[in-house]
Length: 71
Image 1 (tube, rainbow, N blue to C red):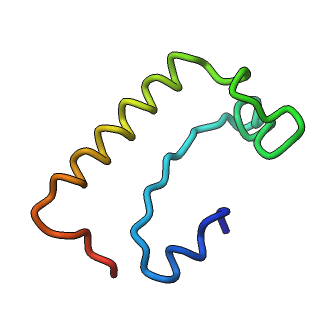
Image 2: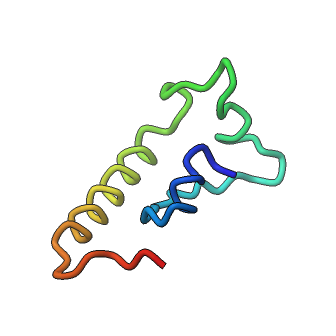
């Protein structure tokens, strides 16, 4: 279960930003939650793309006429 998975069990709407790794796990999950886990190992262009995507999604959600469903 992810770090905040229990919130989903309580009905809190969740957003997952999935990162694709290769079969050898040479990318992010080699470092995730390790001593080498740092923003410096990430590709800055990928991070910019993710920030834009997540900010856009939050903007759209905040502008909805109705709350997100919780089921």
